[in-house]
Amino acid sequence: MNPIAVHERSDRNRRGSVSLIVLVATVPLLLALGAMLTLSVAHHEQAEQSLGQTTASMTSFAAAQDALSRLEISRKFDGPYDLAMNGGTAHVTGFAWLGDGLDNDKNGLIDDAAEKDIYSIHTDAWLNATAAGKSNAAARSYHASTDVTAEVVNFDFNFGQAIYIDDPKAKINFTGGAFTLTGNDENLDGSKGPDASRPAVGVNGDPNGIINQVANNQRAHITGNLPTPAIGQTDALDFDKYAAMLDPLATVTWKGPDDSFSGSIGDYNNQKGVIAHASGNLKLHGTTSGAGILIVDGDLVMDGHFQWEGLLIVKGNVYFKGGGSPQELYGALLLWGQDPPGTPEDDLTVNGSVKVAYSSQGLAIASQTGGVRVMFWREQ
Image (cartoon, rainbow, N blue to C red; front, side):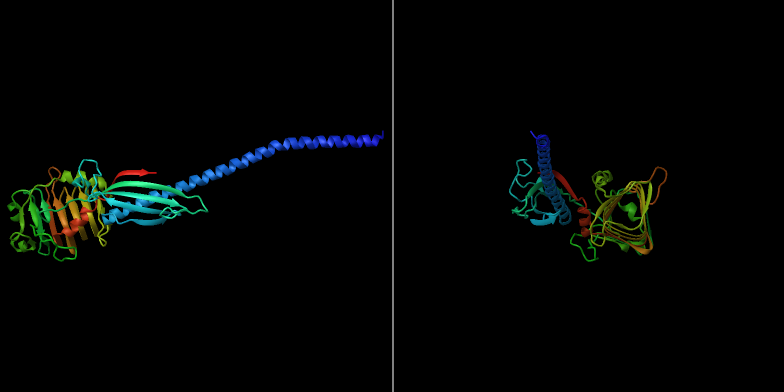
């Protein structure tokens, strides 16, 4: 046999063996790569589905928040309506419990007083689908929903006077004759309001001690449904009750023993009120305007141009120091005039161009500062 032929055959055998070994070694690698590719695709689809569902849930959540914001502004549900946000769409529906003919609070009574100002809100949110749920055949669609029950918090502020003085022995200090205190209901533009006239000042007890401190030439500036000065007796009010109800809802606060502020508290021009609370004494200086409720645990000093629509509640003393700058309150002032022991001061000081007018319109702004309280929230 030719030695060369034998050698070539041996080489071919070795090459075939190597090819077989490479092929055998490659098969598991290909299988592993295929498994990895399958796993990668599965992970990608899982991530895509998770992102799609999260987006739908976020859209539903945001739509519910939008409905609550609208409810706080309008004080009722205005709907149904659709929203486009976060790349998805949402359909928002809702209804008032009172008047729907159902026992929503499960107390055995239909449309009773306990259902007043309570609303149910439902949102359906879709990704890759319309707000009505019509899906896109070319893409996977995702859905989420949110159910909310919320109460519109309305306070009932209707006082028997423009200024309440808790202490019949209070000391007052009225300077000059440029001020006006009136219990005649006035709208914010100065026109006549719808409510009946009442005293300008109501005193928790015998009012004569307050009346006797008003000079004869000042009495015509204190008007209402009584002969001037229109100061009469009224029922007691409780500062602690108002503090317990309002302090936790305050969105503007001063925490120090003596604070000062100048600027806007709430939105005076657009008549959107807030609840503001000062834990100590508060001085409002410069140009200050506000709307809603201001509750002060100490003294309140207004020094400069001051305008307020709503309610002032003061545990300490009140100082209107208008001087040459006008100061106006449309709503009501509640004054307790409590001094630290051993430091008696004037409970109410009115100096300069000051107007305090009972205003049902101003008190309506204060009544709506409670916002919206969420009673139930569920996401699906």
